[in-house]
Length: 199
Image (cartoon, rainbow, N blue to C red; front, side, top):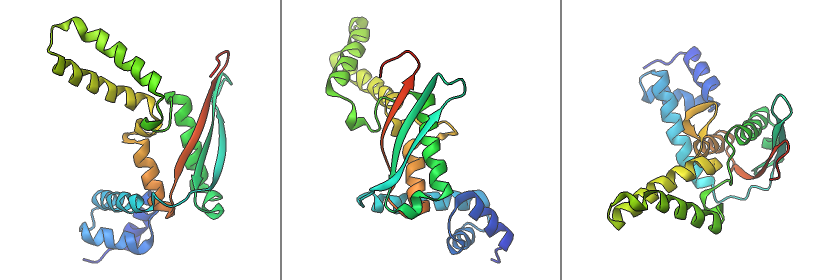
């Protein structure tokens, strides 16, 4: 199948993938742009998993203050080289992360960072809410686990739906960025500030 340069250009603009990767994806998907995007995303996420072990010690610290100056965030996002850190695409990603922190109020970056006392307290509250339901203990345990998963999705930045595209999680956004830049991308830490509140 003959793939037009216009179609390749459109796919490049939408994914940031290389020209040959775009051409190959379009050929494999019979010229279907949406299927080619999905194909590249899947390939990129697979490649991102391989890069996850590489050291990311460069990057940016970004501050975002929401209009009205009542809430803001500072984030650190790392990559492997200062070359990538200076690109507009990486800067846009870091800004998106800061906006996500302001909008979605995560407690931690990943679920393994939730303090044990916070987790135990959450389990205790959830168990107390359904204790008098008359359900067997193993059913209560499954219900608590399901609600804990919901707690993680709300509290852990990487598991939250991306504010600009709720069909994707922040983890997917980071993996796609890793594939796009060809470097390991890591959200290292953040602080969120609200006027009149201590963090």
